[in-house]
Image 1 (cartoon, rainbow, N blue to C red):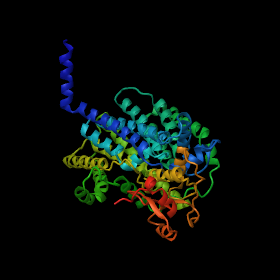
Image 2 (cartoon, rainbow, N blue to C red; image 1 turned 90 degrees about the horizontal axis):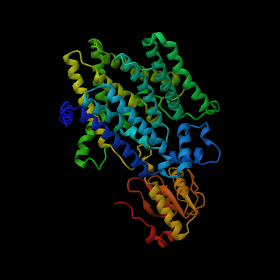
Image 3 (cartoon, one colour; image 1 turned 45 degrees about the vertical axis):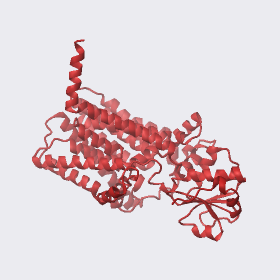
Image 4 (tube, rainbow, N blue to C red; image 1 turned 60 degrees about the vertical axis):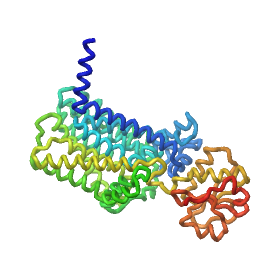
Amino acid sequence: MDESPSRALLIWRELKRGHVPADLVLFALAAFAIAWAIARACVQSMTGDEAESLELWVLRPLPGHWAPAANNHVLNSMLMRLFTVMFGLSTLTVRAPALIGAAVYIGVALWFCRMISPDGGLRIALFLCLVYNPFLFDFYVAARGYGMAVALLLWAIAIPAWAFLGLMHNRPRSLIKAYRWSSALIALSFVANFSFAFVDIATLLALMAWAWLNARERRWRVMAAAIWPGLVITLLLPSWTLLHWPSGQLYVGTRSLAETFRSVAQYSVFELSPWLVNPSAHQFLLHFRSWLIPLTCAIALILAIVLIAKRARLDNPHSLWLGRLATLIAAVVGVSILAHWIAYRLFGLLMPQGRLALWLAPMITLLIGVIAAMPPPARVAAALRRGLVIMMFATACWFTLCLRLTYFKEWNYQAEVNKAYDVVACYNHTRGVRDVEVGWWYHAAMNFYRILSGRENFRPFTSSADHHPVDRQLYVLNGATEGAFIQSQGLIVVYHGATTDIVVAARPEIASAAKNECYIPPPL
């Protein structure tokens, strides 16, 4: 009886300080993010890249997940095969590896936010920026290896950082074990997506440098721990794939570093949800889109320069740890970008763009969060810090207003393939239609739904990028680019996507005979 008032008083004091509400908000935001990712995995139409990976590397009887191809993300393909064999084929099992990557990423984001700062407001702003970025959120769901690679990379940084933080606070933690885990995670990040090679290597080198400078009495053991687990994993998993890698696979990217950063910024603010923002507010907010992220980065850069120039107070273990963590992250970003630039100049290897540069979003966000968490040494730094936190909240709000449920930015033109397949399946059941031509935009995804359903007796869907055959009963085409073909063949559009240009066009005799059952009027 005597303990209850004291516990209640303790909780009340924590509530007044804001610690408990901030953590509760963080956990609630994390739970919602996972739930939203699962909902998207169930609702969203399968995309061509996902379906092609499934068909080529997973569903075949031989172990196709070792195939040396840019579309094959080895770790993702392996896990896709595992889940589809164990639980059957569905959109959820195909995307289960990506969802696991989402949970892993959200977990490490939560851990980093709590390690970096005790400030509840900063924790929430940083967590929202790390997790709710729509660019990143797409790859929590899409059955590709990018999201998992990012998640494993951040864990590879977080575990040694946590170990060093404990040592600096005189709470002994094994650097040997931390670096073993980090090495394994970096290797798995590379197996999840080969395009992360430069950033993975840069992270490993930066972590080794951190250990070399701060673990002098056992540096060689730490160096060994940082190398051998990753080496073993690389030999066991992707080595055969890498040794048999054909030329001509790496053709996506950009020749401009400015475009690398521009693509990450543009993808991160695409696009406000019309379900969350009314038309008037939407038009008003669009004026801020182009400078929201650049301004946040500019304030963070100026604050970093002020912190260095004013010799920011690193007189306590946590501040010193923040300074070293910021240096590590900045080094990883800088070395990775430099390596990409050198590879382009020497070998013509295009620099990353869009999803190939996905790792830049969390790394720069994390760096900004660390800079904001450092104690300001002067009034100007304190003012800049307040401005930076305000901009982080503004960015976090923008990201939250970009939540989407039914499409990926990268593949938004395929958002309604599942609905188009329902129309085509209806014609198969009601009119016995078996011959269907599908434009290359939608061919792989339509094949996925044919395999998933198993209730239709279609002949294999044909697809031609140049000249479509004229003897098919139904066509699934892009209405915006292939309207001339539809008109020349006298086809009747029986389905038009509400938000995309996908159309199902039928021969007049088939369309009129089944109009009542399968026809869907075009959107207004």
